[in-house]
Length: 300
Image 1 (tube, one colour):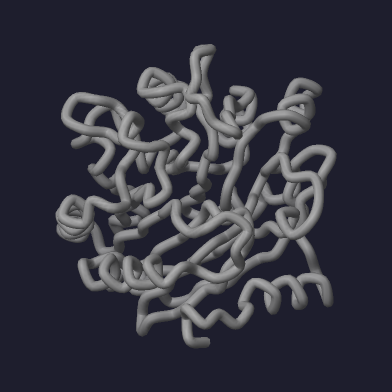
Image 2: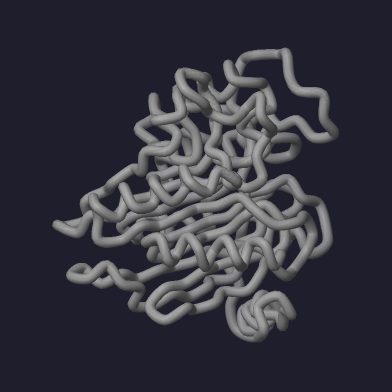
């Protein structure tokens, strides 16, 4: 399973898309060679104009979704704080734009039940369940509830426990893609480390994080792993540490669903186009070491 971090198609990426550019060109082989590829879409994709009053409002060029499908992405998490930038109607339209292209959506739905129901994929007889959990979400007005569209809520512990346990009954492995942490921080919050422990105890096999726009360490807990933050993937960042990118590549046992291996494949974003470009040699080695930095919250 291949995982990419925060992704969207705005500003220079939108212009690149309009010129026929493919933001995933340099990572396409990794995405297509994996049995399943997952990214976090940090944006609405909508024709609506009315939006939340906030500093950053994202509405992605729909060409990005076409390239997602073409380049091997299968599952898109929208359980984050930008899926609801254009309110509940924007969430519904974003889901439609994704599913119309054959992309599976996690982290949100057109009802509370839909948002919290795992997507189960059968890979040559091994069932794997995927859940999106938005600890950082767009607020009460964009959280799914009853018949209202929206994202999941990463603070609803009772619901999270039920959702993970329900997913575990259907699959050999349960993968959680979560939006959590503090922007620009390279270490996880203690509250997120505690949440990860709970989710693993409830039956999660692995947890993949995003939102900080910086990379944070990968930690193995017995046969389970948490990648606290993948950082940005295809993103409109112009300079600095936000250009650090990459993919997580996880191998699961087809018989037990346990994590057999996880490696981080580092990349660097091309600022003019938003494309992640894979690193090699000393640059790759340095990038992996940077991601695995020492964090008091992890005790590493």
